[in-house]
Image 1 (cartoon, rainbow, N blue to C red):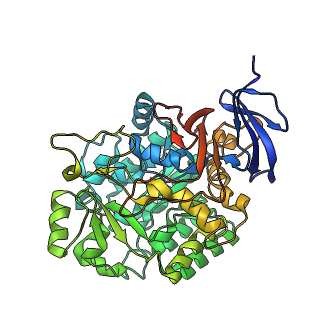
Image 2: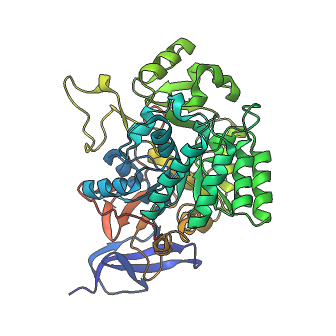
Length: 497
């Protein structure tokens, strides 16, 4: 009988933690890496991967793609673990239970959701542990106001309960709640510090965008880290900072030198995506970011929003509808260099902000309903290209087409770095993000000269190319560049309170 279940033979094994970068065989037994060496015995599945890189699967700290199509696109991009940390989910125990019942292509996990806890407390909305409910109430001003002391206590109580149920931290959509008292943010950070849990913040507006904001978004994050001792993770710093990187990175660097734990993430795209009902997308506020209505593309119809009147109409009838927001020109050299700067910032990790699929019903056959398990995805399915291409695009830009980062350092931003951000709260993450004996068998095999994104704003669901194999807990989810359609080996990533 074969000693190993799978042997990946003769690939270039790159482990950012140990520094290993050499031709080796990698043998898997069950859901773990069993041996790394030369001329290992044959496995039940024995694959020649000469000329390919074998490394730890990518860990996405910021994914809203909970639907099967989105998970599959991420797997085709080399992602083996995708976590909902910025928005979070409440109640978190229900989210874990539902994901387990449905089965997932890749590993999954959730932070507690400050936004959902606020919606529930301040408006009486009954939330069902789904992102759809969050998006649906984005435009409701009732949850965006300043909370009373009693309401704040109830919000904190909900978050504390979620942390006790294994939440991976606290997600804080501060940028969606302009009326919140900065003191509430500090109390949430203090709760996280006491629990030994990170926070993941979509920052409040910078003063450059909104001079009348209650507090500058970047200063709010670094102040909370200093005053509470919490680990403050700065989500998609690229899309909330834009052309003010000098000041924001200066703040972050000073906080880090002073001993505060402030970390950052970025994705390599010049456009964002969110629910069109978001407070900062109100027609009267677009100019704060130098936007006009036509900079928005409404995903359900594919239309560029014509004018303020049309924007108001959509926000009133479909506040949850997703929209592409064009901030930077990815083809302009200066903007391209700026996107690279966010990725190259010391310690920054790659995170996609992957979005769920939107279905254009006008593109479906008459009478047909969207099929979430269809593969390849039909033309009616639409998302932000970052869902399908963030990691392939990042590797291309960081190592071949824009920067000349060492491959191991680029991979660390995709795997080891994200794992380390979570290790204190989630000891199981010490087995991820590495290629080492005893590590989880979450692996990606790719061609370093060919790996690249294929998704575009016009054709957003084209999978990354150059990814040859992806294994999750020792099971193939991508084999010989093809999706294994019935694979559901994903497991929960959950904290030990």
